[in-house]
Image (cartoon, rainbow, N blue to C red; front, top):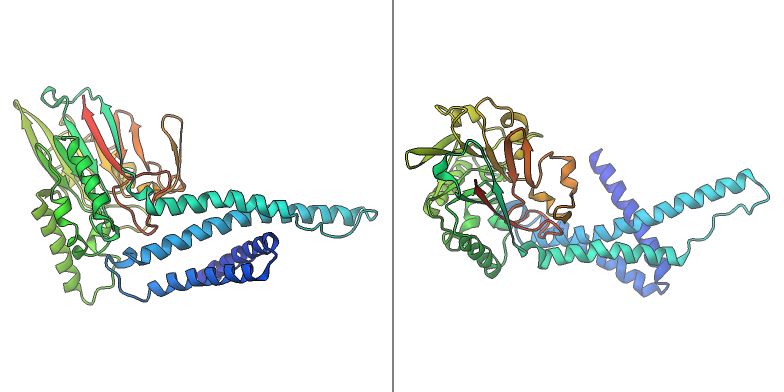
Length: 401
């Protein structure tokens, strides 16, 4: 039934889009060219799912075809919205003429300027998504915050915490751009770096071409990491459980070779001048069918509400469900996972919107509950749609005060 509904929606979109092109371009060869191009895009995307690609589900070149398909659909959906709205108006006018017989009982013809307007406006998201595929996905932004905490130990005032998240190495395709992102990270001269999960899409070998790049990341005190939902290999069709376990062990070994301290439902304590700050890391836990390996109580064993803690958890729904009202008082939480859906509109200090906000209450940036804070990082890489529009790849720098 889901397939029938999906195919019916796609058919409706295609019918309306074809009507618009036929209205705008009366020459038959143009219409034929449009149909052929649409068929090719559908064919390439569907065909990519019958071939093996590096990075599993969303590696190259499959991601490119998905991005091209989504860009075309953005154009066609825009056409549908305009023309369907016009059709509703036409039906209303027809009904009025039925009620008043003196009026002419016919549908008014579709006016060409409506199709032109629809195509012009629909071209904006189309070209935006193409831009996102070629430039936006590497438009790295450094977002800086200074956060004040009354219970922060004095010895750690001014501590610079850098957060990165969601690298998704199996999707990456440009070493020069990624090297720029890594250099941008190192230029911040962070005291500690927290990586909040999803190093790969599915497979540990996705890091083969990227290890030497990410191995350059440095922090004055240390780099700490956790697992994201994609790191467990749950979205790959394994030949055996042994293969899945071997892949997972390889991923853990990569973190170790990078010099990143993996925290799996555990914590580590930093000490300065006799005072302590605790980095707590939990495994992935997420609402909506995601795995729930996270155990905040185990991770914070022997810690008290008075201890200052930075919690790393991949999915921000965990903070909403388990952390924000926890009696042990986790002052600062660092999460990722949402990517800000890689699509949205942000005007700093004025407006922020993405479709992902209808799924996650906390989806990008700083949120506060009583005196507890969470930062949801927009991600360093990308997944599925190989681009970003309006929601740019992020390096977060937080100075504690």
